[in-house]
Image (cartoon, rainbow, N blue to C red; front, side):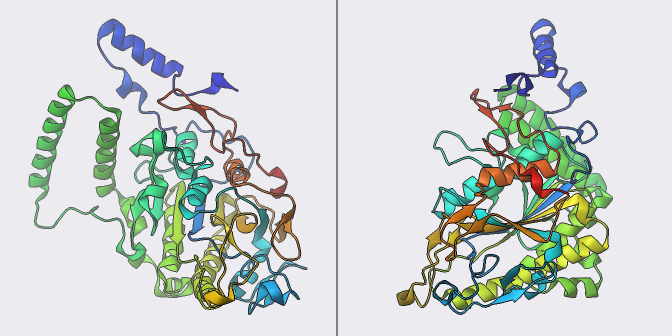
Length: 431
């Protein structure tokens, strides 16, 4: 274990503690908080990605009806047909025709496998690299990215979650300042970020001064890291309100033809918002698309879900590529597990949970596209080549960003953690 890299008790914090003991003062304002500075962050690989767009397919996306087709095996494929792609020799589902035309940018991770077959536990492991424990909440992947790489733009949040569950993007033991900022409807922008027109600037300033005085009085009585974290978020919110970068959250600034290019669904517009946020220096954006839990009527539900995914994902890749941003932006499509090769006829041709084998996708961010990594057998029921765990997957995301995958962070309880637990980055995926 590389404990000398543990950053919970650094030389900087040692100086702060010594100053408090010897002089009764804190040097914290001089040194800043424990969020890494992007100016100080040096990626550990050349041409590292600068941002991640993580498209979360919540509910367990069927690998057989999307990325890992088995042509000729009607028993497992049911009504789903395979189509050719822009990558020679690779086929995917007919449910993703636009994505098929962008496959030159992608690696299909068809060897994914997990130990978690329930939604909450599966999403937790995928999002955080650790299994759920009753004694601790582990940080989300975006929180790790913020901790290790820092913000690219100090005027706006570095970690944003669109249309997702805020509980899945919290900072865990790292605290609220590392949590994802939640946005429900991408067309609504960043809520409560504009001063009400009925309040004058002078009145607003007076209210802020009063609130600040009350906060300082409260802190003399109650001292808590959680309270200090929220005080920092309060300051961040005020800075955002007065920043030109607030327009990054406003989709009305986009030309009509671009909005139509992405498609009308909430998910597709979330992909467009994600592109805008990357342009303004947001480090990690998660866009969630639910409804993949197809125990019933799989062959009606999956095409409908895929329509939204196909529109938004394909447009995002094409748009990033056209703007010269794809090489520095890693785009991820991920889900907590797959669906059974067996089709349950008594459930109107549904598919049940299947953690043993499923698919995810990586594109951009230095990835060498137009290929697959990992392979399942002829029925899609077992990984037979290059099995990849959620921890390996997250280590690969971290590697794309040039993060120190082995760096240890010590939790408040004194336990060591790394960004991807014991996962190993798949470096062969990169050009």
